[in-house]
Length: 419
Picture 1: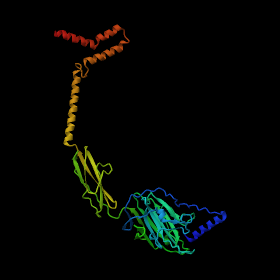
Picture 2: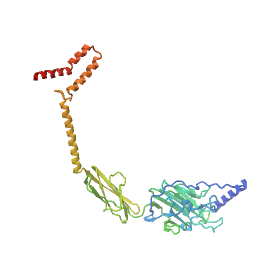
Picture 3: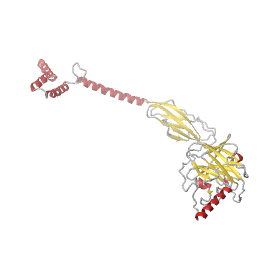
Picture 4: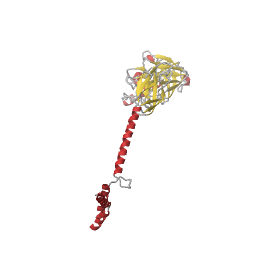
């Protein structure tokens, strides 16, 4: 923000006071209130900054307050208030005529990307201070996050803001910048800068004070590690480290019997950085980790036959991973086979007994297991049903001609013959 704009804001405030007697300080658009929007905690412990062919491992600056409080933006509407419209972040994270970026991790694990331009120099006063300008394009900002602090935030501000493009301009006595809060998941944020005369808001009508350095900060807030960046190249910030990922391998027996222990071996896995920390085993191929080990071998026993696809995921100290699979054919053991054969024999014997029992009750010349008594019962039922519509004499006739009566006669005749 320029001194001219600050003066304009002051005059407008004075006009409101003189007209209405009391000026009500309302938070300008975009300035967060006491409660920040929900944001997920980061899952990552390591991060990297890449530019050109160079990769540097970095760590978030950790603090005991949230990122907005650490940035400490002040204007006439904030508490504490200040007409400087500037960040009051510690001098250790700002640079005179330079720009810095860093990751900030709050106590709740939420990680933010913080951008700061220049260093606060309140001793520089007046309306003719030189102007500075920078434009940043952002690609790959994760959907989990948002800009929660826009410096500046007043109506009619000089700076131009969108999610993926920010144009800043400021005088040489103030700090400009912003906070993108809620870095989570897998992402790679690429920042493409334009400085000074190449920046969108550079105004050749006014004296210019060029930005001369760009750095990424890491570690301790009071004494951060500083990585100088090339001001003419894009830079990418991502989770993970700079080391090479492991190359996973997995071997196992081609086949194994049920109830027999099988050993899975990933000891031929290689890692250029020699920093493997964990082996995650999935013994049934369902995508879930069944066991995690620090050693490269694991054992498992299968209780049922079938083909199994086994997976091991190898993890190194920078959370880089690689996976390998092996296929094992699980066959029934000899004991299981004998048990199955015994069950089959018992089932067959039971079937044979049932068949024989049915044949004993079958009628001569018939394949149906229907004994004399059973036939008689059916015949009697049929006669009774039909008899309800016939005279009693006809019913007797039907009964006499029924198979029951004929069978009874045959049995009597056979008995007489035997005598």
